[in-house]
Length: 264
Ligand SMILES: [Zn+2]
Image 1 (spheres, rainbow, N blue to C red):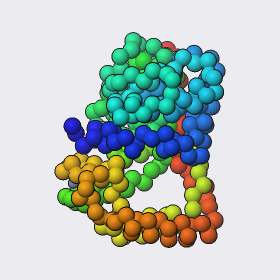
Image 2 (cartoon, helix red, strand yellow):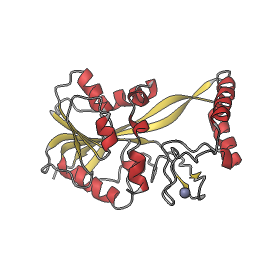
Image 3 (cartoon, rainbow, N blue to C red):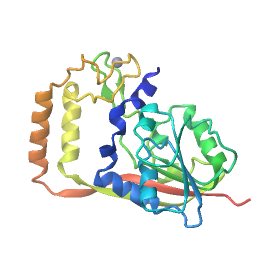
């Protein structure tokens, strides 16, 4: 299995509490507010464990809901009632314009070359009237060195970053009609700490979900000893002590965008 696929099969990525934080719920809630009232059906592609579908179900939406997901680990961890079909985004098993809305939340930044281009066309094909997208906003992508071979890569496999201008150009048959930047509270120290970690380089934590695209070394490998558990805990404790004393600022974290099919 390719490293990129192995990354998404890590069950740690799909635990319910990863999507239960107030930040994630804020993002999902704002995104749900973009769904036009007249829509009757929604397909959420790259739905993961179905956290967005579960939020819509909790709101007793009249929408008929469906999910699509490539990761078997994510489907097994499903938190929604709606069906999540296993499949790839570049070969959607539905007819043209099968759903009023197709949503892709925190998905398209992950898609590798080729799959990305084909998937955008497929989303356009099965979307009847609307496409709803959320992605990190102007992400400054950081690359972590693999502790085994040194290859530097984005540990979450983000292939690209977006702003409102680049988002406006991704679909051929749909216009960007509305967008919103979602701000989160972040500690003033966060950029300083990130810079310090970057300078320290080798002491950077290699997350358990990370899988090196070059050699296949994984963060869950027993040999992953770049940072001992005790050191990680000590560092986290120190970081919390520093940041809890300092004020927060509003950081632009995500952008939510709604597209509508061009009238011919
Ligand atoms: Zn490696």
